[in-house]
Image 1 (tube, rainbow, N blue to C red):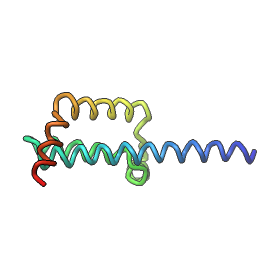
Image 2 (cartoon, helix red, strand yellow):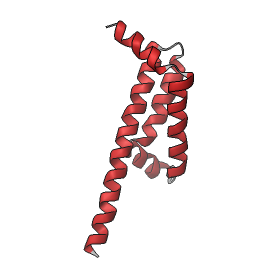
Image 3 (cartoon, rainbow, N blue to C red):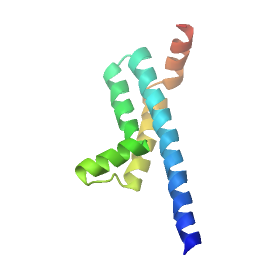
Image 4 (cartoon, rainbow, N blue to C red):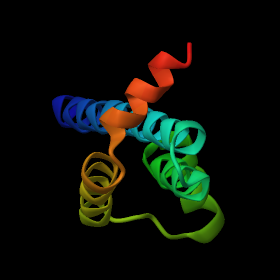
Length: 102
């Protein structure tokens, strides 16, 4: 029984790490799009969506609403964020703009 609780704890830790990682990457994409893009609203929208991945925010939403965003929905949303940022949002061009402004 003790080893089973460790497996669940390890899985939760890995999920939290993945949530933090993608949340921070999504937040960075949102910041770049907000300040160096042609549509600050899009950047703010991406940054807010990225917050769904951060474990404390996800837990707060679950506590307040009683609803947890399903894993499949977060995977699809993550794919759409990456697709929008890289394909439609021209992320690499915006990063070049950001770096040249420093």
